[in-house]
Image (tube, rainbow, N blue to C red; front, side, top):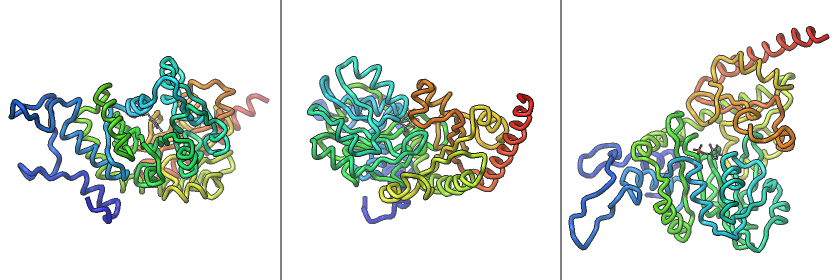
Length: 395
Ligand SMILES: *Cc1c(COP(=O)(O)O)cnc(C)c1O
């Protein structure tokens, strides 16, 4: 594939695989677990779908090209991809992981990998000095998720890669929030990029999937071995759905991110909103760094109302977003991290992570930004009037 195409062209070229046999403009769905071998001595490229399937491979090739890596891998979920990646480590190895890492990644590290002797330290990865302090002789990987969830804190990928290389360890980046449209960690020297493709890459809240892209043949070979050995591969039909989702990724995420910036600006101007977390706003602490390593603040933002009651009134009065976990879909998704994605933290841990009881996370979809802003403006109006009623009632 020519490297000089613009990203949006590449996206289409990589996902529209004209079938040489039939001319089909789409990659066929090869629903076959096994493949006939023509020759007794020489087996063909495919033998069994856990080891390789042409539909899944089309997806794996597409994501590898889009991230600028050497090989892609499709898994049954983001967590399947992440878990398989951590099994590149062995007993006695150590991982450095962000304090505010995705909850499922936190769980696999603390409740599963520890049992197999894989150690970890949680650090504030937005501080390179804190990472450096945590590095041990047995540190094998520095794991990064940027921007973080739900407070959108930004970690300097290049600084992490520099530290990792100096200490002979890998850098893994969970690129779910940015996608290769906005951020390409392999170009900064990261070794492995991971995705919950359930989010922006699928884009329609209809598939659970994970992707990984290796930056070198050495890591690709080891990850392929594990993908086949552990077997948490993505199903064939879901692989096809992801190829379909990918085709519109560029237009979807750009429109959503453009709306997110406007909506973040709207919230920032509201007196009832205590704080807005969005790395595309100049007031955000990670704004400059985000602009250096990514081309957008993305399509996810969080905002903090006074308390849980205000968040509840707000959620009860919005008309447009669905109120749900997950993100990265055509429909806007509003979630309440203290009870949803971060329910496993206790109140003190949530406070420390900056997740106040009035915090709401918004993944902006493809609705018109003006309609969304109007909807949020109405809901904030309801918060004001209903709060006045209860405050007066308490007096
Ligand atoms: C959702 C998510 C995951 C986990 O992916 P699943 O597809 O749900 O298994 C990992 N990392 C991030 C940042 C996510 O948002």
